[in-house]
Length: 236
Ligand code: HPA
Image 1 (tube, rainbow, N blue to C red):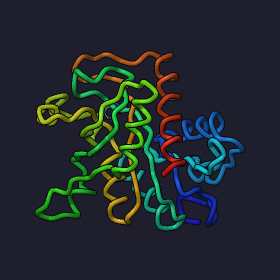
Image 2: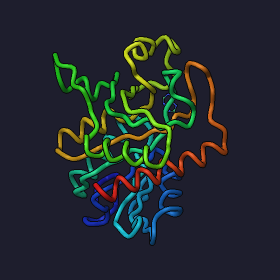
Image 3: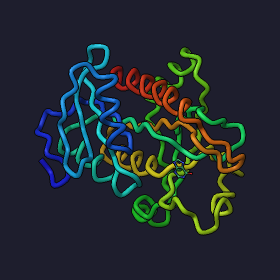
């Protein structure tokens, strides 16, 4: 039990999916898990444990942004013994080659977050995905015929950037594919505590072309992303 999580020791499986939205956590558990059990509802930040293809797995909402995710992830690792954490989210597109509904496997996560920058003094730490999870996700996405890109994501602390796209323009010039708000801290905590992490995002709105995903595409692409993440999680 923690101030943010009333689950008991042993309530989480060793591998946990991390959507930002609590209702997406509920949807994942109720749609994909066999025998889902609610393990956390503090602040309605829902967490569930069940099985996928007969193997134990959990889902825990992270909330939006790096400070919120960092609380849940810190506790999942240090209080509940979680070993593999896979964020499943959406991102904005920063590169015209990434089309709406394409998956981005975040090989690395650049960031403006003081949570990451503040810890390393003169150094620029490079938050990276676990290679085994990344390779597994890329292999499975390829086998399933999903459109995906592996590369650098931006994890920003700012959604409404005062300088609009110009606030980001140096990053696409250096190959950054998309922007979301959580991966860099997830990778930094995983590195610090010696566990595995990966972020998979569906690109839902392109900041360059202004193309947006339709409601139908959103649902079917989320299903593909979650099935992929669950297959990676239970083998991790
Ligand atoms: N910015 C940050 N996070 C996001 C975006 C965005 O444009 N789209 C989806 N998640």
